[in-house]
Length: 428
View 1 (cartoon, rainbow, N blue to C red):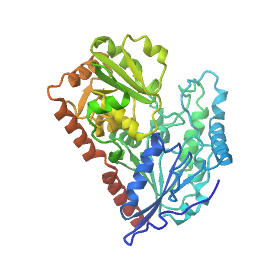
View 2: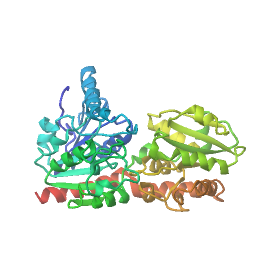
View 3: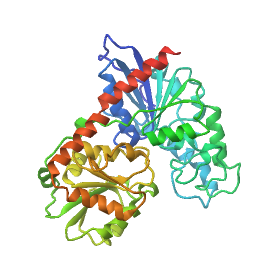
View 4: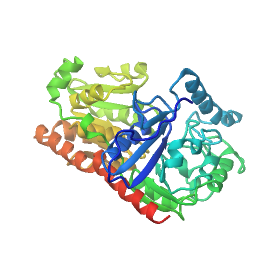
């Protein structure tokens, strides 16, 4: 898998009290891994010796990060583990084509030097063949598990929507379209519970997710608390709207409504609610903006002028996209947190969302945006209009950014985790 590096070479501080290793799947250019990497960087600036093991490509020349895809062969094995992890779902031919993870296949991080020298193991999003659940039972150190979606609670799905079987025991899974109680979801559910580490603290990145963890059969007898997701606020500066539009080549007199995600039309992102809301907006006054993967054939039929930026990898570009918009519409049905909402606010752009799940912790109603009644598309449109017609746009944008920085700055969140690390190591 390439060279295993130990943390903070040449960067150690005299006051270091705790050594932590982060475990996260995915690529640090986006998703949960990016949040974990921002946290890792912030921890290095305080009295924590932090290292990170990531499935995807890591940053160049950063010896505090071990990438499991640092060569062509390593990348092949990473992809193979991901494919094998989902292979068992192929039995269910009528299943819904949504992400379902088993945790049966993964990388044994306990063999690395980073793990062996750590005082605390910090799990993040560990799917995509990143961690075999059996590996968790081998951990003999305090474990922090930052849950970034519902998978740690369930028998395989990442968002359960209206299914509450995780509160007792999964089985006859709606996502698998299964009628059998002893199905794959039940097997995954029991396998997970049997292999949880003894010294475990669960951290939800939103109050909604923490409450779900407390109500779940898996974590109801474990320590559960909330530490909000973190944003590298230095990556999302306050850019003049007109300058951002000029950089992006947006030459329009219309107000700009932004909507985006890695995959905009994922079932839980609520994109259909956004398109319903558009019928209450004036296409003569509004231009749509999108980032992420989307079906442009569908978009072209909405009757609005629009601009799509595709998947945006670089923060500087993403910052300009957020800053150019008048409002960011985030119509998610279920969302663990809503990192794009916080990024938009850090760029000074107010957010409109439904008053449910993770976004509840991000948007302050009629202060940094608008929380629409769930799942009322007309009220979502009313929220967009509220932002677009606000009497003092500059003040609204400034307050939006200031509030976001005060809540989500990686430095603040890192301090909360540092205190948690110290508490759990003292109680060993």
